[in-house]
Image (cartoon, rainbow over all chains, first blue to last red):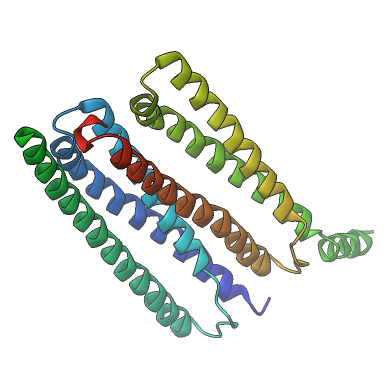
Amino acid sequence: MESNINLWAYCIYLPIALTLTYYVARILFENGKVFMLDIFHGKEGIALSTNKLFETGFYLLNIGFALRILKFNYTIGTAQGMVEELSLKLGGFSIYLGVMLFANLYMFFRGRKASKANLVVNEVK
Amino acid sequence: MIQCLALYISNASNMTNYNLIGYAIYAIITYFITVRVGLIFHKNGYHYIKSGLEDESIATSVNNLLLACYYLTNLGYIAVTIWFWDGIGSVNTLFESLSDNISNIVLLLGVLHFLNMLVIYMFSKKHYSYPNI
């Protein structure tokens, strides 16, 4: 089989990309709980629910993206080619994950600011 | 006889229908993802619906109806997409086409989910002050 190396590359790429997503999501949303509790003024039910909903969305988007970029458009000829292609793909995916992580963090901070501003307005009322 | 067997095996492997294997794997994986995500939404979205409706029994039934609606649309969409698959010739194309189609479903779910949350957020902002959520 001439395209055997492609198959190897897929089998290496998939577990690494999925574990990476899992660890990033776990770190982000373990620490996101504190933000959510702050945003919702300590109401635990809705804060943890929101955290879980964002976590699910994060998983869906990132695993979807990881699967979307899986395909190699040509047959990889050598082991060297495979290593190069894999490093490009996994590196790109990890940069994408970093950007998503910062976007989420930005959202947390914005929510915190908005809820604080709202609290002040309500107290004035 | 051994030659016959070898011939038979090679013929069988030539005639392996990768499309059917692909459909089976695709259906199982997307079914589990959809159901699991639906249950998570069902459990965690309840607080939002309750805060919007202020009546527990109506909130519960609305939540259940939404879950049923979600299942119908998504599982229906999964079934429909099977019609659009190209022919699959090898294990390689099987991987590629599986990942393509599963990523379609998963990305669709993710984008719809964030749009939903945006709509709920705007709705709650319009009708209630923020800490009421």
